Image (cartoon, rainbow, N blue to C red; front, top):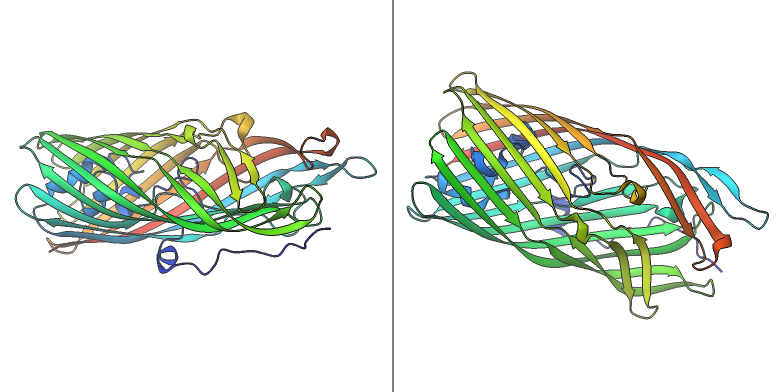
Length: 424
C-alpha cells in the first residue's frame, strides 16, 4: 500500500516567520549573510569592525560602543537565485534497472530578507542593542513529478533570530560585548518514491532555541580597529507531523521531532583608514559545520526515521573590501569574497546543492542629513558547478533495491539590498 503525495507545507506560519523567510542559502551550507544591505555592498568584508551604522549589531555586539547616539538601521535584501540540477537516476524495477532523467531547473524561489537593529546608549560606558535577523535558511523544492525525489524532494528551513545585547567600553582601546538570541525555526524535509511521487518519508515542524554570542573590539588608533566575534552553536528541535512507509510497506502518520544542529561561527575583521577618503577592510569567517552530521527524526510510535547522512566539514570565508568617500554625502563600496563549501565532494547531495562560491559586490550610500542616510548594495554570487553522486537502498539492507544519481549542481544568485539608517 502507498499514499499519494500532495504538497505538504508547515502549519500556519507565525508572524515572525512571515517577517523573515529566506528561501535560499547565500553563504556556505545553509547559513545566511544578508543582515545588512550596507555590508552586502562590500561583500561583508570587515563587518565585525567597521560599525558605520547599527547593523553592526548583527556581527559584533562590542562595536556598539562606537555610537554616542541612539542608532537605528532597517532594510531588506532581495535574493534572486538560479539553482539547477542536471543528471540521471538509475532505479530498480521488477524488469531490471532503468535510467531516468533527473534534471531539475530553477528549484529555489526568490525571497525578501528583512533586517532590523537598534542601539541605545545607556551611559558613557554601556550600550544596549535589539535586533531581528535571519542567520540560517534553506528553500529547495523539486518539480512534480521528479524521478529522483527519493533522494529528497523538499528541504525547507526558515529561522528568525531575535537578539538582545550589551556592550561595555573598558577604555579608549577596548570594548566587550555579549548577547542572547531567541531563535524560532520552521522546517520541512522529505522524499518521495521514484516515478510515482508517493511519500517515502516526510517531516514538518517548528520550535524555539536559545543561543548566545560574544564580541570584542580593539581600537588601535582612530584609523585602525580590529573586531572579533563568536556565535555559539545551538540545537533547534523541530516538532511536528511525520509521514512515511513502515517495514511492511504500509503508509503511516505520526508525530515526531528532529534535532537540527546549527553551527557555531566566528569572525576576525580588520578596518584601516588609508587616507581621509579611502579605507580597506577584510574578514575571515569560520563556521563549525562539522557538527552537522545527519538529518534524523525520532517519531512517537514508529521509532527513528533516518532522512539523510550529511557529515559536513568546517568551512572558511575570506573577504576583502574598499570604501571610498567620494563627496561629504556620497560613499562608494566594493568587495570580493570566497566562500568555501562545507560539503565534501563525496557527500554532496541534490537536496542541499552546495558548492564553493565567489562574491562580487558593489554598494553606495547617500547622507541626506547628519542623522539620515540610505544605503544600496548589489551582489552577484557565482556558485561553481559541482559533481553530485548519490546512492541509496530503497529497501534498507537489500542491495538489489539500490538506486543511484549521477550528475551535477550549479547555483548563482543576484542580491539587491536597501537600508535606511537614522541617528536620534
